[in-house]
Image (cartoon, rainbow, N blue to C red; front, side):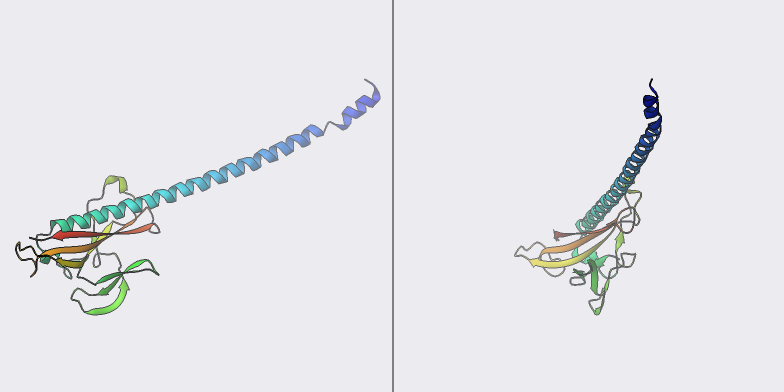
Amino acid sequence: MSPTMQKHWHNEQGTVLVVGMLTLVLLTLIGIAATTTGTLESEISGNEKSYQQAFYASEIALVSGEIIVEGLATRAALAEGTTPGRYPQGSLSFDHTTFKLIQSQDGMGDAIIPRPLRWDNTDSAAVTNVPSGLSGLATAPRYTIEEREFQPDSQGIGITYGRTGTYRFTVSGRGTGGSKSAQLLLESIYAKRFN
């Protein structure tokens, strides 16, 4: 080799080191981005699971309340005002600004200062039989039952609560997911005719 060729190769000996270092930096940045993306996806998946749990818990609470209404022998068996989670007509309303169920009357029909339901043993009833698949809930699913309206009819089959007809009830079910921040409130209208 000529001396100029040796000099030329001698000047390029550090190039491999620089290219190797740049490649390592680039691979490190790709690894950090992949780890960050994986962590974010894991958090999103956890939140989705928690909200799915809240949905299923509130469904269970809603169905439990409907089963209670279906099991009532008479309208008087609702026992509103004496049994937690059972309210007379006009007691509950939904506040669209705070997204909370508000109690506007006590069990005796007297007006009180409206306040949000606390969803505890005094304001609602708890579901006692929660499936094992929902064992990680932050709180037990709870429900309320409120008489919504009475639709009289002309059928003369017995006397229920003084009149014959169909009673409509608002059943509200509240569930939480794995954390208390994942909350869901579902409502249904359930009709029952007492004979």
